[in-house]
Amino acid sequence: MLFELRYPTRWYTKLLSVILVLAFFTVLATATIAGYLLYRIVKPQRTSPEINMDSFPGRPDAVNFIVPGTGQREGWFFPGLRGAPVILLCHGYQSSRGELLTLVSALQDHQYNVFVFDFSAHGKNPGKTSFGLRETAELRAAIDSMAQRNDVDATRFGIWGYNLGAYTATSVAENDKRIRALVLDSIYDDPSQMIKLQVERTGLGGFPLMVKSAQIGFGWLNSKVRNAPPLSKGAAKLAGVPKLFIEATDDPQLADYTRELFLNMPGPREQVIIPHGNLASLDEEDRRDYENRVVGFFLLNMPPTGKPAS
Image (cartoon, rainbow, N blue to C red; front, side, top):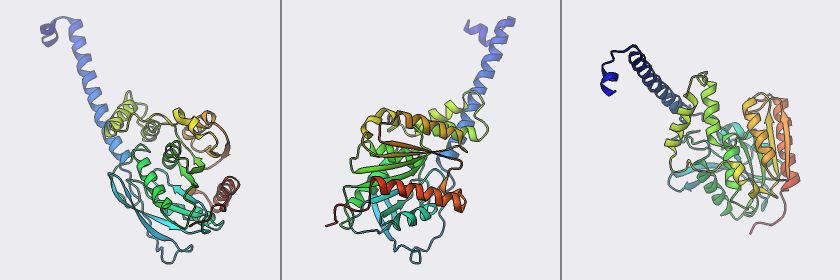
């Protein structure tokens, strides 16, 4: 049989040989293209707008903190009422902390302490994004850094996050009782869903095995953490934590992921459906409505009073 496949003499073995050769080169081409797409996805073009923090309102301080196994990160701390909780803002994929400053101001105006920083592969930070698998260590380090301050309530934290930031916030909150309120905009249940979405947005998602090849490559890149369960598996841990899910209809796939996760989460929970997502791209009126909704949720569920700072 092997001799016949190597030196086909019959018509059906010739046909089989052609099919096998075509299949091999199809798989090879798919894997090559998927690898290139994956590289472009996990190393997005970084954006870091130049902002003079010395002249920015709100008296922000640059705060450095250490992420175990990664190194130093820098964030901006905007002080609010002494002894008030801290709200951390977690930007989305292909975004940065600089795009969240209007939301920072809205929260700080209501006496919250606010902290923003950039994830790996975003802002000025090198590395690759893992869509939340490794970013959890960065967020935990940021929370621990804030908890060491003597001018905040180290027992109460709130988090706002958009896609990548929302996934990371939820993953950390499932194991950190200090997190008392969550605003989750365009969240997904598993990072592989974001790989699928990004491949499809290139227009190549319809090719056979293209999405699957990219997902396999993503798992290989993150082999040490790829077995992290979907957020829905740990949903029960968030019982009692107020959660606001924001679903944007102009991004149907992420809207579906957000709705599914909302339905799987225990209470208390709220759902808001808005026509346009991505805070950085909203016009002034929509942005103001969005920020008022977020601030109102935190005021209701985690008011900026309570335990005084030591």
